[in-house]
Each structure stands twice: as structure tokens, then as C-alpha cells.
Length: 622
Image 1: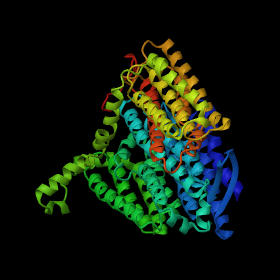
Image 2: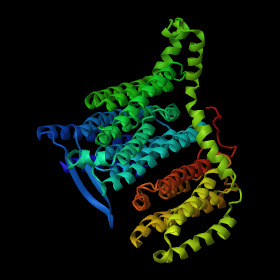
Image 3: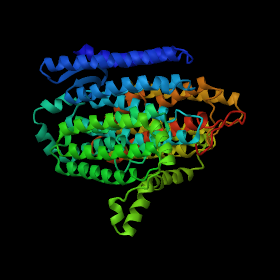
Image 4: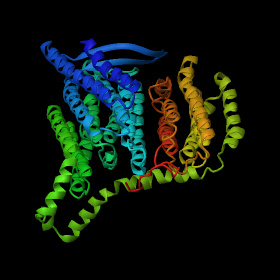
């Protein structure tokens, strides 16, 4: 049975690498690889499920291999399969197979044909990895893959302004969920004293007693997991990102935001149900947010002028009900609801272009006034207020911008004094002093051991905030992100001793990615006169290879699972004690803004309408 799981994971990953080497003009070959890979995965999913049922439908658990062990910390790949896994696997593999077939003709002669299927296969691999994840560490790899796949597909029409802008916006919200999962892993590690596997939650002795005696830690874990799930499933107050994610091609909207990715939040809540099923307050929170999401999304869906937005909000409303079912302990009902909603929304999105054409013709020749609704019987003031709030999407998007992004931008803009020269002449010596103090760690008074992690963590936050708001120099923003990583590492080193292995694990990815990014920027500056961050420059048109290299450097520096820094971030959190919420929040905040700042740099330099006027430029409102 273990080989089935490895094959199901290996096929989409192998197909991804195969499509990378196929020339972009060979549409038939690319489509053949995609259809073969997704078709085989669907057949194997059926065979695997039948074999699992015949063997007694027992839960499967495989501890594959340990990537890193350092003291009490162990990062290992763990695979797990139960009824939840097989349910998602069956409908997920069928939908990816059908969408792969549909996309072959739908995207025919698109300039990004190959790029779409590259990202599509990468997404399939990440999705299957999440389904078979046996612990938080393994799941987080797939979680990150889904996040970057979403960004790339929303920005598929990268010559337009709005798709790129919305892709950055969605990725920014995703980062909040990513760090929520990191903090849940951190608190879980301290609660159990180890990196616990999901199968142990079913069998571990004294699970209930542990959660009762450590109720505050268990509640924090449950809330962090719920925040992560809410972000991915577009629950309140994060609902506004889903319609904006529909900027990508219709097939990507179907597979991501109609069927699979948007239901991963519900999957996470079902997978971790043993953490919170006995916590009444947490269940009330989940159910209440689900109900609020259902009500607000239902009203919003009815006033949308875009068919994709209508379907998106209708799907969110159903997911709100699914979360209520999960909170009520109705796991089987929730799984049936998830499957039905996934198929129905996929069907709606795939036929939406045809429906729009049909409706336009029908209204032109056979116009019928709308019938009265139940709202028409309400007082007009209430009716008009609800309509106004619904058409503005309950101000969720503007409120997040006003109360989250604007304060960050204002604070970052206050630090105009931070430049390359001042970083070199002031902050690098401060970092050097920190290294000298670190050498006296054993004889340092306890007061300083408590103060220095907060001090250096705060300096790191200042740097990444400036990197996030920098609009002039690309190198300044890039260098500040690297310095932030260095200061965060120093803050953790003051907090608890780090071994050479732990230091090299985190720094190897930072150093390599940082150098590659600097070289890519310098190469681009030699070829182009202007490389700034005050607009979208669209340099991917003429420099696609540099854009690809720089994107990989951004992902490596942000802790994406292509360098050891990915493990290093989790490793750093293991050296923060459970009562150090301030330090943990500062480190988590830095990692959130790091990723957003890096994607912002990449998007502004390489995506969007090309700065040169001899290229076709899409209208800003397209």
C-alpha cells in the first residue's frame, strides 16, 4: 500500500518535470502528458481505494524518512491515509483529470499554454501531498505549493494590471494562513514535546487528559489551525479574496476556487478534529464564523454582476455551512457536502462562458423582468442598506486594506532613513556587536538574555517593513529582507543555543538565494535602464530566463520548500519557548512580510504591462 501512495505522489511530479522540457509550441505533447498523468492517477486512486476497503479500511501510516534531527527536534516526512484522504483523493483525481482534458482545447494557442500546465501539475502534486500528509511538517510542504501555484495562475494573464495586482493580494492573505500553520506546529511541538503525527491523535494514550490539563495551549492550537483553514477556504473575514482570484483562466478558477483548493481549509479542520472536538468554545467559534460567512456570502452572491463572482460567493456560502457541519461533529455529512459542492461549482465555472453568451442573447430577444424577492417585502431602508453593503462586499476588502495594509505602509514609509549605505554603516555593525555578545552567551546575565532576542527581533521587523514599502531601489528592498533573516536568526540564537547544523540549515538557503537574487538584479540593470518598484515593469516579456531565476531566488529566500531554509524556519520556532508569545509573534510577522515583500519585488519588476511602449499594453481596467 505504501508504494501506491508514493506512485500517486510521483506521477504528477514526474509529469511536471517532463512538461518543463517540452517546447512550448508542442501543445499536443504537453496535453498528452497531462492527460496521461491525471488519468493514471485517477485509475490508481480507484484501485487503491478498492484495495483499502477490501483490506478492512484500516487507517494507514508510513514514516518515510527523517530529513533533519537536532537534539529534541526532528523534521520527518510522514504519510497517512484514512477515509478523509480517500474521499478527497477520489473526487480530486477525477476533477483534475476532467479539467486537464477540458483545458487542452480551452487554452489552445494561448501564449501561456505550457506555463498553465506546468503550474497545474505542480498544484496536483501539492494537493495529493496534503491529502497523504501524516504530520504538520509534511502538510506544510503541500500547503506552500498550493499557495505559490495559486499566485502563478491568478497572474496567468501577466500582461494585465489587475490579474497581477490581485495575485499579489491573494498571496498576501495566504501568507497569514501559512504563518498560522507554522505557529500551530510550534505550539503543538511544545504541547506534546515532539513533532506529533496525525495517527497518534487517534491512538495516543491520555490524549483527552493532555488537552484538558493544557487547555490554553490546546485552544491556541485550535484557533491557529482555524485561522489557517479560514484563509484557505475564504471564510469571514477573508472572503473577499476569492472573487479576485477568478482573474485567472476559467479552468484554474474551477480547479482551485471551485473544487479543490478552496475546500482544503475544511480538510484541515477535519484532519485536526481531535485537537478541538472536546473544546466547546472553539466549536462555537467555528460554527459562528461559518454561519456569518454563509449569511454575508449569500447576500453578496445575489448582487454580483460577474458570473465568476456569483459562483465564487455561492461556493463560499456553502463552505460556511460545511464549517457548521464540521463544528457540529457531522463528519460524514460534511464530506458528502464537500464532494457535491466541488462537482457542482466546477461544472458551473466550466460552462460559465457559454452561459454568459446564452443569457445575453436570451435577454436581448426575450427580456423578462425579475420577479419580486422576499427582500421586497421588507422596509425599504433595510432592503437598500443590505443591497448597498452586499454590492460593496460588506467592506471586507477595504477594511482589511484600511486597518492592516495601510498602517503597515505608513509605518514602513516613516523609515526613509533606511538605505543601502545606512544599512551598511549602521545595522551591519549592530549585527557584528550582536555576534560578539553571542560569543559571551554562557556568562551573560539573564536580563540581557531576555532583552536581546526582543531587541534584535524588533530591528528585524523594522527592516522587513521598510523592504515591504520600498519603491525606489530593488537592491535596497532585497538587502533589507536578507538582513531581516539575519537579525531574526540572531534573536533566536540569543534566546536558545543553536548548533552549527541548525545555523547552516537556515543560512544555506538564505545565502544562496540572496546571492542569486543580487546577480539577477544586476544582470537586469545592465540590460535595462530603469529597474524600480514604483510601478509594474513587465520585464518578463524580454527577459523570461532572468525572471524565472529571480522567482526561484525569491521562493528560496521566503522559505519555500526548495532550499533548507524551509526546514530552518520550523527549526527556529522550536527554539522559542511556549510562553514567549511576543518573540514568536515577531518572528511570525517577519516571515509573513518577508514573503509578501519578495513576491511584491518579483511582481513589480517582471509582471504587469510592459514599460516599453512598442509592446501591446492591456488597459488598466481589463
